[in-house]
Amino acid sequence: MINKKSKGSILFFSIIITAVVLTIGLGLTNLLIKQFKIIKESGNSVLAFYAADSGAEFGLFELFKENIYDSGPIPTTTTYFLDSNLGYKLVIDNTSACSASYYCIRSYGFFQQYQRRIELAY
Image (cartoon, rainbow, N blue to C red; front, side, top):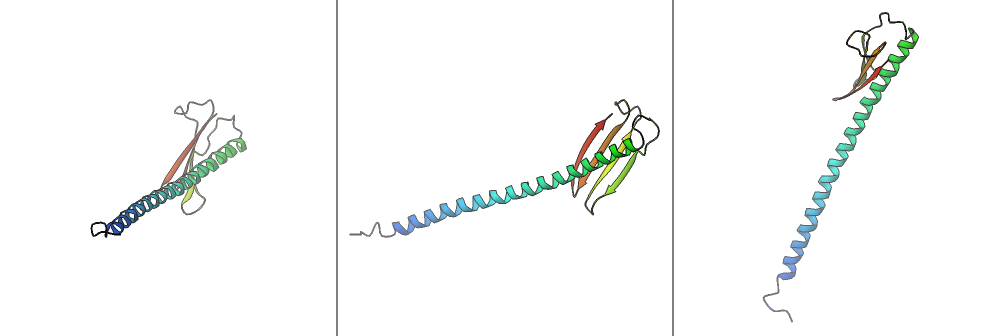
């Protein structure tokens, strides 16, 4: 038999349980949304790194094409756009600022607001 004091307790407990489940669900949703943003941003960073790698490879190609051991003049700074937001800036240096025996290659890859750099020394 149900007495008057416990009549509304089932409704109270069901509201409490619903609120707890809803809070946990919203918290997990918020966490997942943040993780998806991080994953997307890391993909953009990887594209910037690949652009920098392309620039470094192109710099090596230019040096080998011009004979790497000839310390003559090499074009120092070049910027290439692979797409509207994707590209690289290539800097080839053989001045005293370069600590390498022959050349220093610095390639700056960029994609949207991300920038990554690769340095090579010969």
